[in-house]
Picture 1 (cartoon, rainbow, N blue to C red):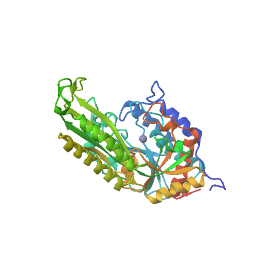
Picture 2: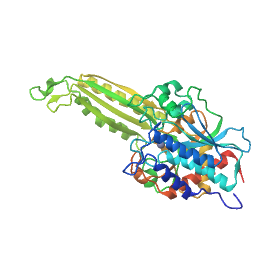
Picture 3: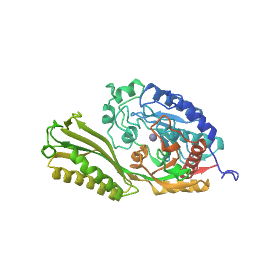
Picture 4: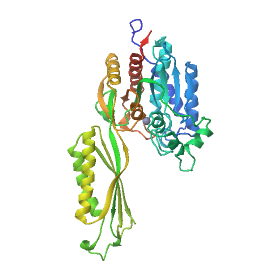
Length: 415
Ligand SMILES: [Zn+2]
C-alpha cells in the first residue's frame, strides 16, 4: 500500500502501446504479420527497446535473440523476478497473443517508476525469440534454448521455407551469435497472456489463475492398402485402408469422452492417396492431436489410441502403424508463484478461476528451470491465431494489475 492507496498500472498507456505495436506488420484485416526474425519483428523490438530505455532499463540480447529489459533492484545482485512473453506473430496473427505479456511487463516497470517503488530484487521483462514456430519450425525456440532444452546449434540450424537459417537471420539483424546461452539467476517468473480459449469469457471471469499446461502430443497413423478400381472390385476383395478409419474414429472419440471434460482429442489431418474419386485408396494418413492436464490420464489416453489402431489393423488384416511425431510434456506451475497471483487477484477484488492452459507457452520451458506461473485474461470468443483476435482494455488492465501486485510481492517491493 502506498499512502493507503493500492498501486495500479496505467491502463490507457498499456492500450496505446499495444495499438502502436500493432501498427508494425499490420495486416489489412486488422491483424499482424510480424514473424520471427523478420524486419517487422526487429522494428517491433526496437520500439519496445526505445520505451525501455526511456523507463531507465538496461537492454540486452542473448545469442539466440532473446531480448531482456532490466530494472535494477535495491539489492541488485539478487536473482531477478522475470516476466514477459513474445512479440512475434503468426502470418495472420492478432494484436495481443504474446504482445500483451511483453507490454504488461513494461507497464509494470513504468508503473513502479511512476509510483516511486524500488524492488529488492531486480525485475526483468523478456521477449522470447520465435515463440510461434511458424517461419522457423520450432515453437518456443528461444525459451527452449535459454532453459537448456534445445541445443543452441540446433536452433541456429532451423531454416525458413526460403532456406534462410536462424543463425543467418540473427546475424543479418545484428545479433552476436556463438556465445553460450545460459539462464541468469531467476527467483520467479510470471507470464500474462490472453487465454486463447473461450472458458473465461463463458464463465464471466476476468482472471485465470493458470496452474499448469496440458501434456500434449501428435500421432501419425499410416495404413497401407491396395489401389483398386472402385467399380469392378467387390467389397470383400479390397484392401481398403479407410476400413481402419471407420473403426478407429468412433473409438477415438469414445476414448476422449471417457476422460471428459479435460481430455482433448483432435483428428486434424486425414489424407488418402492417390485421392481419386473412383479408386480405392492405397494409403491413409491421419494425424491425431492429444492433450490432457493430468499425466496419468494423458498416458492412458495415448496408450488407448495406440491399442485401438493396432487392434483395427489386425481386424482388417492391413499393414500400418501409429507413432508419436511430436510431444510437449505438460507442466504444473510453482505453488509460491500461483499463490502470489491468487493473493494479487484477491487484493484487487477481481473475479478469478483456476485454469490449465490448452496451448503451449514459453513458460513451459521457463518452468523447467525456475519457479513459474501464468495469468490469463479473456479474449473475445476465445479467438486467437486470427486477425480478428480481440480483448477488452479493462480486462488487459486488470491482468496487468495482477502482474504488478504479484511481481511486487515476489520482488520484495517497498515504497
Ligand atoms: Zn503466445
